Length: 145
Image (cartoon, one colour):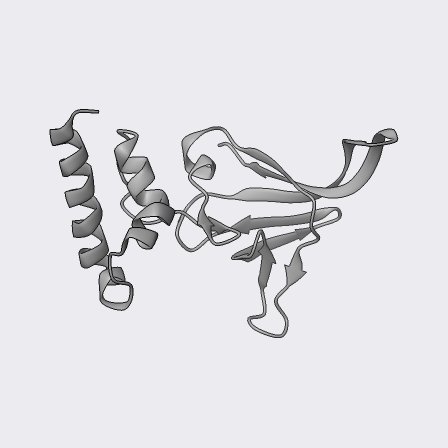
């Protein structure tokens, strides 16, 4: 990346932060720049999305939008009865339940209108110090029309 492209990436980052209102609550510090997934994305020469993707553990889940996505989730999802009925939380992100299935749910996210995923219970093969072992887990896969 040339110095001019780097300046453009930083300029875009500052503009996007201002346009979304994020800059008002979070000043652009060196720590903010060091931890910004958006700035890293821009410096890698990738375009920003029109809206931020859902997060996974407070970090933008760009892979969810950029590739045919399947994810193995080790932690059990949390149903949102206490906060918001009809929702489920996994990877620390709240999703809307569209349908309950025998082995999971069909879900969508407010930032991704029209896109639907299946979250289903599966056994996951993993490696331990004692060799391969099955673990209970969850599989997230986008439905394709």
